[in-house]
Length: 229
Image (cartoon, rainbow, N blue to C red; front, top):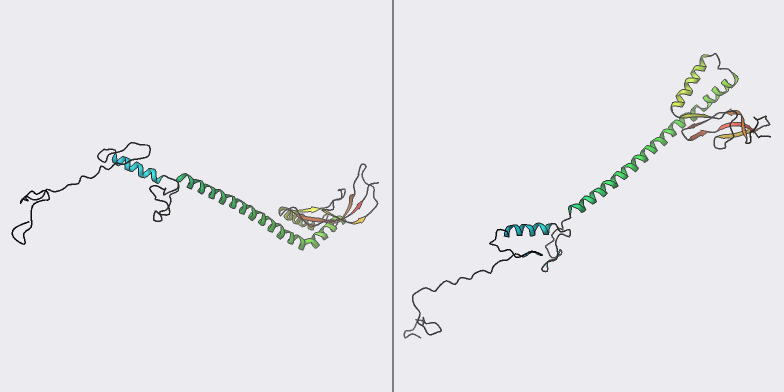
């Protein structure tokens, strides 16, 4: 204690008297910072390899497939909504699968369009043939009776047959053919001499020719048939 009030004792707890010399500055040396990587030796910040180790650790973490990994209590849910990175290989596989699926869908779509276009074309030509059936039947009867021979109309009838042929129209029915219910309609059953060796019901006369467009029968041929004896 001092003799005068207001003054304080400069002595320390050890009993030594204080002096006017300022107190020495206390310096706390920081602990040595050491970067450790799994499976590698410690790296001192003072070493030249310190930055390389930090960079390698950073890129190693970014290359993980699951993005944020659980380390020191940090999980993808507690990482502030960090978005998980996807490995480039997995992304390429997804893109390739999407491309293959789109290609398959395009091929199927093109096939449907082509098929529908062919069907629509056959239906359109079939409607035209149905409209021309009375004319085609008259031409057939005129040929059967020989009325077209030596007349200008014979060439016109041939040109009409050629035009219909370019659109896939085929005439059905001819004498001597084996009877086929898919393309023939038997209107008469008659007795007739058939060629030797015939074993099936045979067309002997075409009353009205049939027509088909592609594989679609517009009208079966109306015929008379005979059975073998």
